[in-house]
Length: 238
Image 1 (tube, rainbow, N blue to C red):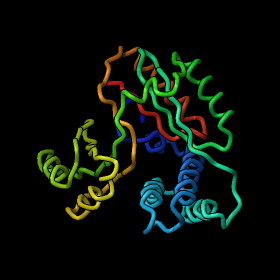
Image 2 (cartoon, rainbow, N blue to C red):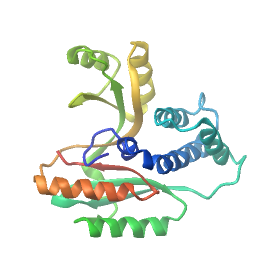
Image 3 (cartoon, one colour):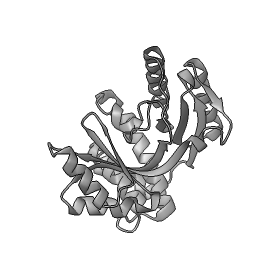
Image 4 (tube, one colour):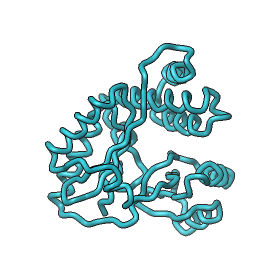
């Protein structure tokens, strides 16, 4: 998330830089490993794993990397002990932040995230201080491919979406967490191409900040993205 509750992840927004590919693949590898560990290595029976693999493929992650990450999750290959982590904090202008990641050393990652916030006009917050400002939602982005806005919005609502939003030409669909897969399937049956789908956080209310604070927030998100353990950053910036 580049500074707001937009469904694009840090990983997706950074893929434009080819030098980042190795880091992106490493992050996706950890996501795949965690998903396989939780629900098994068969994506046809593990919707979380299937969704992550689909995202990884859109980033051109090599097939052998995906298969190796799955085997680490199922125990067929040795791998580091990974755990999911989530932190809450505030950024420039008092913007609320939720930072998600996967790490092999939670103490180290906590220390690194805290330092990054402190160095970029932000600060850590206690557990629960920020999360109440967000709703957990299913997030789907689709390829609009020149389709009319009214038509896309109607299809999304008919498919069971809770809400839809436009960010320029990017069309995002929000669902209840438990409805993510069924809405995604309904959209695909209508001929729409899914760009990404995941569970994430959407701000209940967005806050406006100054242009200077927006620049500071962007630098903060970039700095967090440079941490191998950080996957997503959600904010309530307008």
